[in-house]
Structures are given as C-alpha cells and as structure tokens.
Image (tube, rainbow, N blue to C red; front, side, top):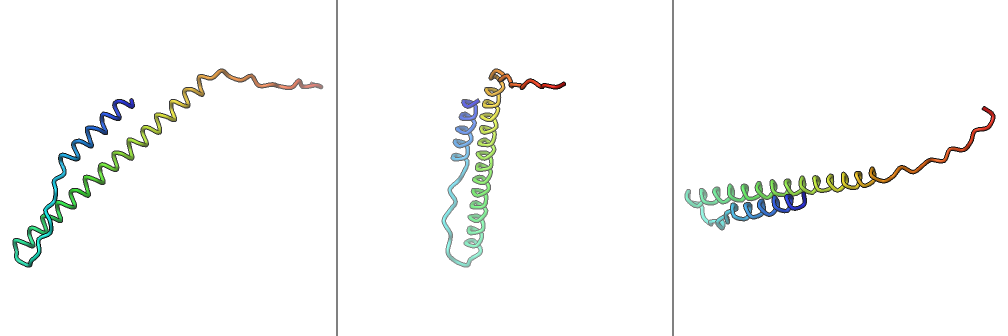
Length: 94
C-alpha cells in the first residue's frame, strides 16, 4: 500500500508540475490589449490556485487514508493478541 501511495503521489506531483504554466507578468497600461492580457493573467493565476488547492486536497485525503490504514493495522495486531483470562472471584452464599 505504501508503494502504491508513493507512486500515486509521485505521478500527481510530476503531472502537476508539468501542467502548470508560468503566468505572464502584469502588463502596465490602459489599452484594450493590455487589459485583456491582465485578464488572461488573472485567469492563469486562478487556474494555478485551483490546481494547488486540488493537489492539497488530494494530499489531505491521502494522509487520512494512510492514517486509517495504520489504525487498521494496529487494530489487527491488537485483535491477534491472546485473550487475557479474567479472574472471577468465587461467590459464597448462593
């Protein structure tokens, strides 16, 4: 499981790094082309933020799944322990 989780994280990080385009720098000015270029830049920045947010969501879910797996492994180990006999004191007068 840890190998597959590592593989998934490695693939997602490699894909996210390659897919994110560097957004152009802000363009000063008030012409229509400069305003359009700044609008395109803002859309690019929003897309990068969205991708980063999705990536962090995936990482949080992966961490939660790994914690659940560790909890289940600990529970299996506890379940495998032999039962401890409980001492029952003798009851007199019945």
